[in-house]
Image 1 (cartoon, rainbow, N blue to C red):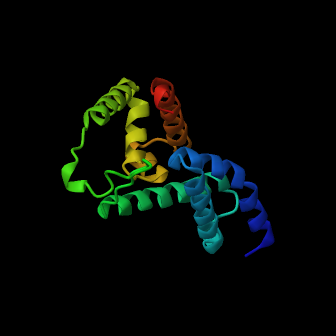
Image 2: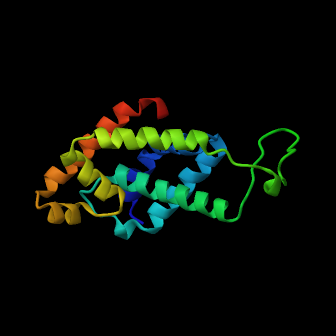
Length: 166
C-alpha cells in the first residue's frame, strides 16, 4: 500500500465517521463501519483510479457495506431490543409490523420524484436502477457531462423536497 494513498484515505476519516453516524445512529457501529470501509479501501487500492473522486469512492464502499450488513441482519431475523429489560427480544412470532409510516414516506418520495422535470427524473431513475452514467448517456443520446449534471440537479431538488427526512 502506498503511503500517499494511505494518507489520502486517512484524511477522509472524519467525514466518513460523520456519514457512518448518519447511517447507523450509533457511535460504536459508526466506528466499526469506518474501520471496515478503510480496510476495504486499503485492500482494494489497485481498484482506485487517480483523478476520480476519492470521497465518493469511499462513501460508496461504506454505503455498500452498510446495506449488505442490513440485508444479512434482515435475512437472519435478528431482533434488536434497545430497552433495558429486553422484553421483546424473542417475540418475533408475536410481533406485528405496521407499514403505515413507511407507506406514507414512499408516497412522499414518489410524489417528489413525479414532480421532477422529465429530463431530470429519467436519468436519476436510471442511475438509481443501476445504470452507469455512460449507459445512461448512450441510451438517452446525451453527453456524459449532461447526465452527471441532471442527476446531480435531481438529487438537489429531491433533497429540498424531502428535507424533513434528513
